[in-house]
Image (tube, rainbow, N blue to C red; front, side, top):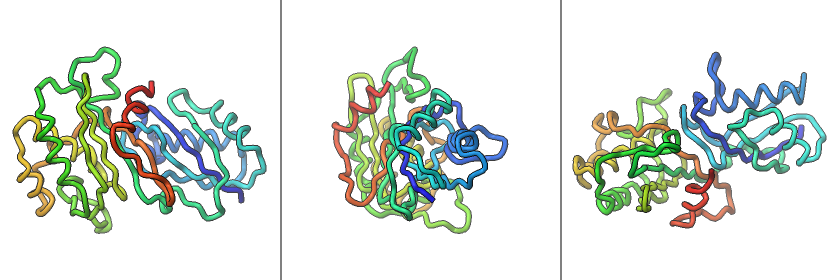
Length: 262
């Protein structure tokens, strides 16, 4: 069975997240429909590096495809893209090692969340417009508290099978742009709703409703306080998946690709 690494971008507004679900339109489900046409009758293995939530976008999701086929990489990319809907696009197809796994081989994931400072006619599906003035410096200080290994139980809903809520965050940074605020978070992995809830708490810090001490408290003792402030999915982008040997991107150099992707 040949194995391929696919790098994928998608606009997630129309989809109930990445993972295939019966009776729901999902990104992974769209790929399965395409593969049924290209590889009719063949066994398919297709897994993504992360399960983005409903409405979340991706600039560079990674998935691996296993299928018994001999086809040039560019031909395979073209055939897949020809059948995909226009809001999903395969950026590249590479040969992968036989045991490469998009999820389990990943060492870090990166997300960027966009907050708009103004009402926008075009980008409602790609940002969270906040009317209130935000103290960005306070948000930056609070974001730095997320770095390191912490228990993020306050930043997710109850998880099945007693899954650990401890996550290592490499960095969480806030960048002030002329018309927007970007929150860039990179970590080993992320729990369900975790990034959106982190952003929601940072916004409340910016509004003056939470303090740095509040954030520290959420990381030391489980609390339901962050739940009502979960940021909407529209502003969240899966930025990149990292594998052994990849350079972790940090700083404002990340933002031009995101802010100008359209």
